[in-house]
Amino acid sequence: MTGDMLFGRSAKWTSHSNLENAKPGDLIEFKDKNGVAKHGVVVLTAEKTTIEQYINGKFVDGKTVMLTVCDGNSGGKVQWGTNYAVADILSEYPNSTLYSAY
Image (cartoon, rainbow, N blue to C red; front, side, top):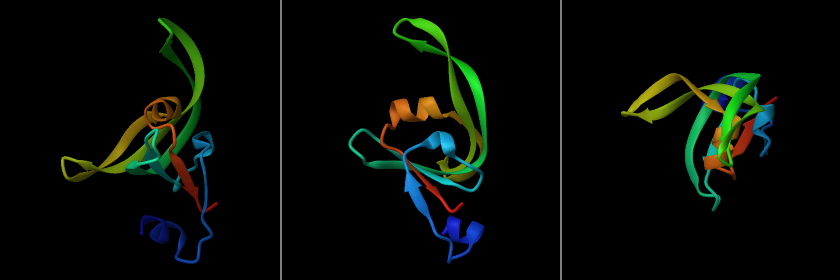
């Protein structure tokens, strides 16, 4: 429904797992290691950046894409401006799917 409002009902949607290719308007379905959908968001912005991550007992700099999204279920309300690093999404939801109408 959100995608229909953004791109029209005749939009040709594609899906894949490379969240680093997210663009504004894309939809992301967070899926756990078993492929079970846990949450969905609409991408507002996507920006490549370097972040410090704690990996194997030490801090390392890593490149990732930071997403700003709109999502629901935050106390029963829509929340605008939540930020996620793609690396963090994939560490908790490794089978997530990106849907795009571009």
